[in-house]
Image (cartoon, rainbow, N blue to C red; front, side, top):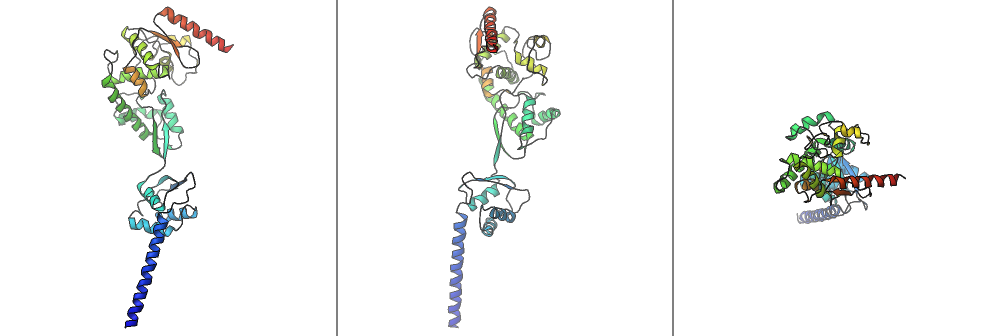
Length: 341
């Protein structure tokens, strides 16, 4: 009997040592970084994939070893059935324990889409359709239904989406990105509109968007936005026509060939600010926050005209009188001829 007790104690001791050794090995494995190289390893978990399949794939690829330990740890944590499909980046320094948490939390790799200041809604839709990571669901005929779903008061998409860089997982729909851009634009308007200057010739945040979109198309220079806003503000206050080429071009539509003619300037459309007074009926582009701020805070002054300088830096010459403006236009044309020759 005594010998059996001694033998049993010996076996128990061996088992205890074995379990302790196994636990030590598992702990060391789970907390030793995987083989992710210096730039990380992209890895995609397919929808419906099990932790068993994932662990075997990673072992076969040489990213991890001991897939059995990874699966056992996942079961112990209770996340073995919770790993989420998607694109992942396994970063350098990631341990198997951290990797399992990454898969279970859905910490997927994010991609980016940049909505560029000054884009119109045709350019925006085309860019979404061409982004390989965006799930394209919209056509140009779907704008009205989308705006209704978003709760937009305007029935035209132009100007309603904030230029910004958006981060998202693969296969995020174009509708979801536009929802974010729409909500951010509403946030910007809610922040900027209450602090607007007094006595502006615009009565609503939507009219601010219209004016900001024109400013956005007229200049990319931060130092000129408030000044151009000042010109348009004074012209509106004096009931002068805005006479701005970008609105005419927008009225022509996607078929515009890049050559704005005198006939175009004389052809009446709702967006021709040479033939019609006041603001056009909708924005003509997607204005950024800076253009919106310029529309709400125009620079003081007496200038009523501006024209490109032709210096190649995007700058404009500003004038108070028509005679000064005509001279600035003549100088611009002279520079153009000089450049051609």
